[in-house]
Image (cartoon, rainbow, N blue to C red; front, side):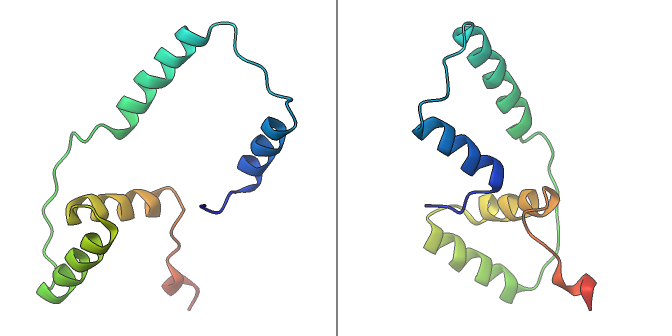
Length: 93
């Protein structure tokens, strides 16, 4: 299981304790969430970058181990970095 942040742990504990209730407008809210999710993850821009062939081979090997295309892995890494889930350790040096 992935590590949960404090908010996720709180939600899981509330769920386990039976403290969560169903929404009255479930279908409407689900549709709103679906539209938001689609807009969030829509891939509508293209970039071209030059990297070393060694780095590309390493990315491709890592993606193969993860069971995904290497471009998806690169996109995921960039997304996590932008979201603050990946930290640049070189800035603290």
